[in-house]
Image 1 (cartoon, rainbow, N blue to C red):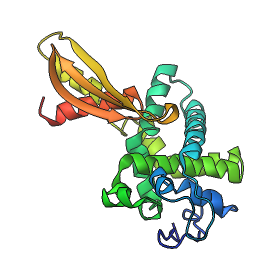
Image 2 (image 1 turned 45 degrees about the vertical axis):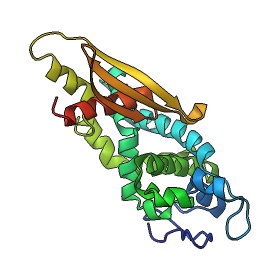
Image 3 (image 1 turned 120 degrees about the vertical axis):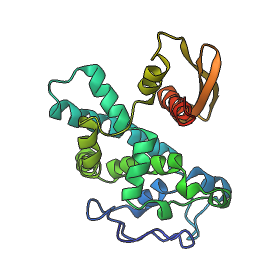
Amino acid sequence: MNKMVNQQNSDIYNIDFDGLYTFKNQGLLRQALTHSSFKRENEVYEDGKLAYDNERLEFLGDAILDLVIGDILFKSMPDEKEGNLSKIRSGIVCEESLAKIAGTLNLSQSIILGRGELKSGGREKASILADAVEAIIGAIYLDSDYYACYEFVSNVFESMIIQAEQGMLNHDYKSLLQERLQEDGPVNIEYVTFKEEGPPHKKTFCVKVFCESNELGMGCGRSKKIAQQEAAKDALLKGI
């Protein structure tokens, strides 16, 4: 990224993501980078224009990202079955992977946050970074069209897609945990959702994993599947 959004100066400069895309409508870019914590604290930006958060753009970008990645995998892996394609796509379109993409785009310092979120380390939170990536994809769609989104995603996610196709991206922690627990024979493993919060299109789920009624770990994520993976990962990190 060549130039950054200055949190203290709400003017938007030409961010072109290393030449991959330059916004025509700078307002869309600013909205894509505006976290809801800023909108809750501010009705307007410093230039007097109304402030809008990126949640709606994130919703749109999430759908577009699923479609683009699905299309790329469908074409590049013609012999793979539906179940494995879905698993590979989930490894790419997940909070952990999207946060990594945000890192490659140097988005951390560009995201516009409220004071409270800034103090709590919001710039490093995977969920905020992941949402910003999806919001940018949604904004590109509105600023241009689907084909521009396709080109942007295929370029930005290229390395990650290759890793996913080769089975080298994110570990399947649930499978690893199951293998570890069942080394000496079958056991009862259960994932229990104990908390759900947030609006319908942006829920956060929290899950605990149990083995024979013993709690082993917990995790949270934007879907129950992600939360289960995080719970399994937590259990493995504890030395299960």
